[in-house]
Image (cartoon, rainbow, N blue to C red; front, top):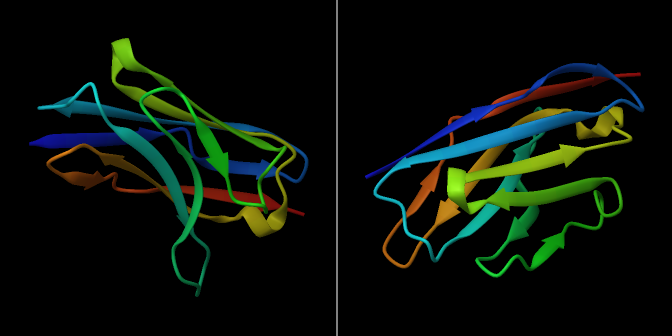
Amino acid sequence: QVQLGESGGGLVQAGGSLRLSCAASGSTSSINTWGWYRQPPGKQREWVAGIGSGGFTNYADSVKGRFTISRDNAKNTCYLQMNSLKPEDTAVYYCKHTSAVRTDWGQGTQVTVSA
């Protein structure tokens, strides 16, 4: 079983930065992908960014150039550095960890960007 612990959310003014972390514990695999998703108020959950085992990254157009996803395999942790935040980035952010045998989600962390 894999447990994911998220941290780093909070309240920030527009233009500010936050760094989200998602640490995996339990039966993790070295071959896996990480993803970040978000769910804005009253909307569906949407994909934000992903990173593969080899470090390949991709981003939703809405965050490209502002957000950076990274991973530390030694710590089984994934990060989402969010810069130049906008009010429309306000959402609950979830991390997702996918291996060959299972997919797990974090509990979510609230990010609120004030105008």
